[in-house]
Amino acid sequence: MDNEYIIEVKDLKKSYDKVEAVKGVNFSVSKGELFGLIGPDGAGKTSIFRILTTLLYPSSGEATIFGYNVVADYKKIRNNIGYMPQRFSLYQDLSVIENLEFFAQVFGTTVEQNYDLIKDIYSQIEPFKNRLAGKLSGGMKQKLALSCALIHSPDVLILDEPTTGVDAVSRKEFWEMLIRLKQKGITILVSTPYMDEANLCDRVGLIQDGKIMTINTPHHITAQFGRKLWEVKSDNIYRLITDLKQIDFVDTVYPFGEFLHITSKTNEIDDNKLKALLQPNHTSIKLNQINANIEDCFMELMNK
Image (cartoon, rainbow, N blue to C red; front, side, top):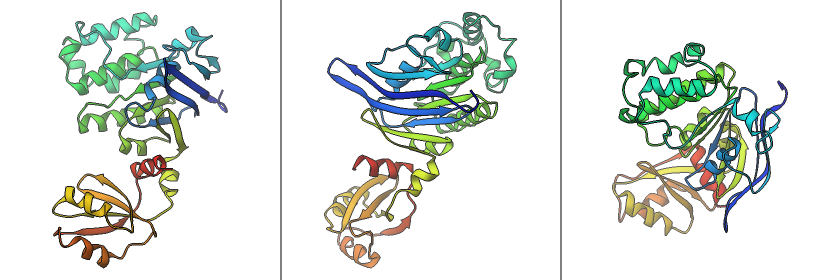
């Protein structure tokens, strides 16, 4: 299957009673690719991942992994994928090593047999191997869950928001681990609500309200933003949001950390004119033209 897609999703839909959570989603993931599904909570990411991991039936459409259908061939798929769900789902009253040995036994292997695959990750928590999983920190739980997902040497990893709720250092370490796993030839499908993590993927799909808005490399997505963008700040950021929205030539206003990102209806902004309009209520005004990031593109696509 070297020249084919490992994961294929075609017109996938999922409804819960009257709520349509996934609305005709299409995407494919190539062998050895790190593909990110990027979007906020409630966008449909977890429903898609639970269908792909054969834990949930789709309402309609089709999904395949290695060419196997997720409904008809679920047993063949389960033996060749590693799944890390959104919430920590290991046995909290078992120790680190007991969890790892349990998952190895489930797949008919041993920790020793596949230790080389997990050693870069597991070595960081091995000093605490006798500690109960429920007593681990968020970052350590994350490493244990990934070790358990890898212990049977899967060809595909499916990770549902693996870095949600952990500190920035642990997030960085986790993505470094994913990139090393990709270099070993493992195909990785990961979801995240953190837009900055999109830049670490080979390709991303931006998803909102059960629909994928675009799929491309992070570079191509940002290159297609299509208009000029500025960042602006002042001594009163909250008042600044209100005041900018009342200026007739300002189009969009979104907060980004200590700055606001704004666009213009004419695609041009006279710096002196904008500052003059703001000066009655603001001091220390800073205004700079910038390049769009993934989050800017996401907000732009939402408004189309």
